[in-house]
Image (cartoon, rainbow, N blue to C red; front, side):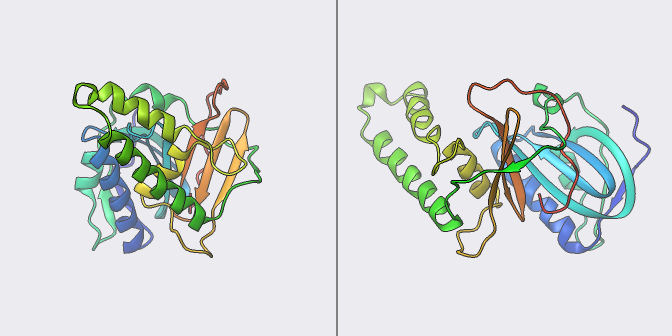
Length: 227
């Protein structure tokens, strides 16, 4: 699509720095990552999909100007354009995005779900899972030390649900790896659901994914600062 906006001006230097940190983490998992950008009013929602976690990561930042656009761009090019000191960046040329960019969570209808452990317990669950993976991986005999065997171990561990919810542990792992989760007692974290989708929300961003075995629809997530 044609986008008239050529440059981005962020509300302050912290917004630009937070976006740069998020893009850097995405690129750590996929050097060719694309991100879908949705600007609405004075906010910009950035959607990415780190392949290691099979979830959708959403980071929202505040803009200094009012823009309305929806475009998919290279995460690397966007990161290279950011100037934190001047709280600005250039909007890269649109790219043909991967299939996930056409399937986003619905805009509304989100309801908070019960049963989610607190942030400290969530962090501990991830640490325990990482330790279990390393132990089981290290116990594999040499002839079974293959990517397939390791993937099976990972699938067994990270598909487990947390607390009394349907949320798989891989979503919590993704939130921690992308800088969204803090293991502090007073850190606000919530689990929301609508239709086929689950969403782990924190002040730094959200992790969204389809419920296991559910069929979801196309849609767009409302652009709001704070994930």
